Amino acid sequence: MTVKTTSLDSKGVGELKKFVENLGLDDSAEAREGALIEVLHKAQGIFGFLPSEVQELVASELQLSLGHVYGVISFYAYFTTEPKGEFEINFCTGTACFVRGVGKVIERFEELVGIELGEVTDDGRISLGHLRCVGACSLAPVVMVNDKTYGNVTPEMVPEILADCQ
Image (cartoon, rainbow, N blue to C red; front, side, top):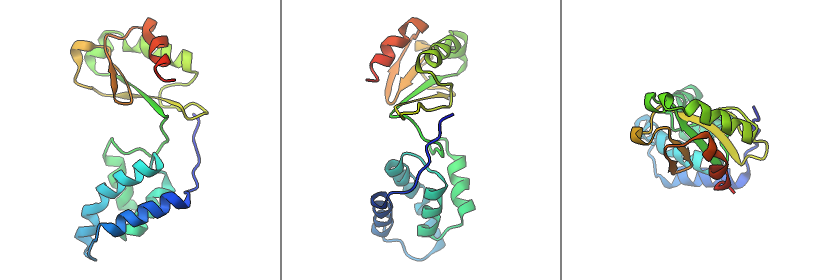
């Protein structure tokens, strides 16, 4: 798996610090803990993911323990500690999609993109992941590219979907 290492750029750090400052939090632990999810959303928006350096920054800015910050990140599926591609290709692996052949669709994507599920291309353009269920069972198998949904996907459709990622 290709993993980007990150050294936090000063612009992003400054943006996050200003965001926390503008929240106008009082010194209470309840206020700082209450702002954690909002700050994590902002941080992930700025940096793209939440590596240890970002977690340490958030913990420092909110005066919370690193363990507490990591606990929230690991609990919520929205947050990621791994980089994602510019084009996040996710496969529904719910029962309907599984039964209707999403496995073959995944194999074709892996073959054409050159990475496996859970990986990111070296250039950071494409990542392959899975979702438990997207609630579109009548369209199974379902593939999502960022916010766009493709239904009734077959292995033969994969080149066309990848062409949309240009």
